[in-house]
Image (cartoon, rainbow over all chains, first blue to last red; front, side):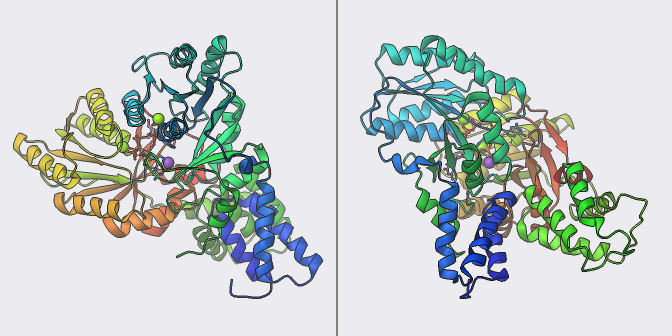
Length: 285
Length: 295
Ligand SMILES: Nc1nc2c(ncn2[C@@H]2O[C@H](COP(=O)(O)OP(=O)(O)OP(=O)(O)O)[C@@H](O)[C@H]2O)c(=O)[nH]1
Ligand SMILES: Nc1nc2c(ncn2[C@@H]2O[C@H](COP(=O)(O)OP(=O)(O)OP(=O)(O)O)[C@@H](O)[C@H]2O)c(=O)[nH]1
Ligand SMILES: [K+]
Ligand SMILES: [Mg+2]
Ligand SMILES: [Mg+2]
């Protein structure tokens, strides 16, 4: 923005940045409108002030994000075992995120157990087992083509018996428009609750950071099916900005907890609102 | 959504009625609605702008038939334009060499391995002797995954679990295929980001070593605005021959298809519509145009 005063041209440029980050038309219009109001009210708004205003506006849309509170995400919880169920559409990075999470929990001194609840996709169990080996923790599996709900039940049961601190359950990727597969998630939850009524304590929806507006519908449908409690946004090490998260946070009030920034075991970060907003406006190199 | 867009256009065009012809001034609001609809469908911002400018030119000066729903008339102009942009014919793949080498590339999780299995089955059914090659040496259990799919479709899988050199594995596989008389080899590769120099160098080297007659870029239909950057970066390095659009059994509008086609000018050759091995289809531009417009 090589100008000193906010005018239509500056706002057009802003619109382009927001849309190009997958923020979406609706949320972009909302943000621009609010800035237009500010400009109308304050008469002269410089482009450097705009930067600040913009960050404030977006931070407000992310307001439900209690990310500031998550400074000790991997500390031992009072709840034992703390059960996390990981869900999402195909290929977003669920299994990889589980591997990374397990590593962090493990490093923070938690006893971690994984449940191989994807019994459908080719070699999904093997994939999770390799992650278990990398971290050095047990993976409960019943093999391929078995009932995911009973795998989850067994993982939670064994966690209780072995006094584990954290259980993370992998599930098969599923598109949110497939009713049977979405119902299966509810079933997994029900079966786990037979053993531990308050479980799962966390349902983590994984969204691919390169996904466009469909992420919105994913958030909506997975929330309907399983009461999603937190989001993880993956693949933010690429050039995609994951801006769709702004609109999702605004509408669904689900906090973003983690971001994935690579394929390696250490490539997981706790979500930081400020850094996320900054990365949206990073000038193209 | 089609109803939606056409209603919005009706509202925007109500002011046009009685004015007889579409002009620069009175069409602005309408064009804006179309542009928004395209961006809602994940068509890239710049591409949407270009397309709507073109549509504006097309519509300009046309008579508004009062009896006809003006929204519908414009939606038809838009639809036709999208079909034209995505290429009107079904495009096959090049299998002229012996053996023919097909290289599969794309971002992480886009559906490459699944598609490799599907393509193997598809070509086998059309009477070809196919070999699948496991060149993803990074992802945990990537080889096992391809082997399971190979078993499902009853196609042999070539792999070297101990070898950490993708170029070598690909070369060895090609040699093996020649020796045992396979007519087509399909090389599955690891997912990679376009900004990952080392990984982009690897796939460029694989391509150079085995000289595929067909290189396919696999894209998730849910991809957002970044699709053009990725496609362009992969195309700059690989000069791929075609695009495979996956996960179309979902409800994503798939604007990425249009953006990619527009930016790299390569045809979309297959679509993937499910996790099972027979969920593979040809690409039909008119269906895709309707989908993007929510029709
Ligand atoms: N660059 C990058 N790649 C990632 C990230 N997270 C996961 N991946 C890659 O994305 C691909 C898919 O990851 P998975 O963990 O198998 O995804 P999933 O959601 O479990 O997939 P399904 O179980 O098949 O639905 C793999 O190649 C991962 O290495 C990330 O943060 N950055
Ligand atoms: N619903 C649906 N799922 C698909 C389709 N194609 C692939 N998948 C699923 O998407 C996920 C990722 O597919 P893969 O074939 O492993 O993707 P990939 O590109 O090989 O992944 P990496 O090797 O990790 O980069 C798996 O869960 C597949 O079953 C499709 O057309 N529809
Ligand atoms: K993806
Ligand atoms: Mg998985
Ligand atoms: Mg693969």
